[in-house]
Length: 257
Ligand SMILES: Nc1ncnc2c1ncn2[C@@H]1O[C@H](COP(=O)(O)OP(=O)(O)OP(=O)(O)O)[C@@H](O)[C@H]1O
Ligand SMILES: [Mg+2]
Image (tube, rainbow, N blue to C red):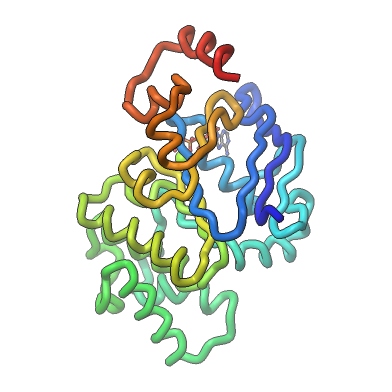
């Protein structure tokens, strides 16, 4: 059974139509990467899944339950199981790194201080930043802030992790580090992950499957090899970094559907 399912989802911010029939199923343990141009709705998809946004039509289910129409309490339960690493990790500048990473633990769980310390250490080590608990966010580089944001979400040990552009703006070493974190969470804890990225190299490294969003729908979905060798011009152009003009796209769409 699918762990996550979007079926016939429509979402607009009038007059802008973002989704006009989004269909996507994700199985437990998958590492799915969502690709697509800027503004196609990748972040919106993640927000729909955790109920931060509501669709006008269609269904979104997580573990057999409809997310659309859930009460705030039920949604809070979903958000304990689905952790989201937001694009542009916002840390609380008035709190230390330790308190930032511990924030959700204090909010959602009853843990002793030693347990919190242990979990914070674990999460910071995983993202390659052991020993920075006492620092303030203002003292960190952009890449470090991003990794602390990731540590904060990982610390909650969610079953599903949503990553919105986890490696954008990071140097190659930190990109590799984050990719390794995503892969080790999957292999060690069977975490299901959905990753939004523009970085095809990362996508090809971490994904068990990729899906491409274009004009309100998923236009392609497949394994790394299928994407690399795709004859679908939309996928091919995206993978190669070409940006054809829109009229071309319309005719390409007609051929590929
Ligand atoms: N809360 C909102 N109110 C109004 N419009 C929104 C809102 N959230 C997103 N949009 C619009 O929906 C569209 C999709 O946005 P989204 O953030 O999902 O794009 P994206 O694919 O994540 O792009 P990027 O790669 O640049 O992050 C955009 O046109 C955006 O302006
Ligand atoms: Mg986005």
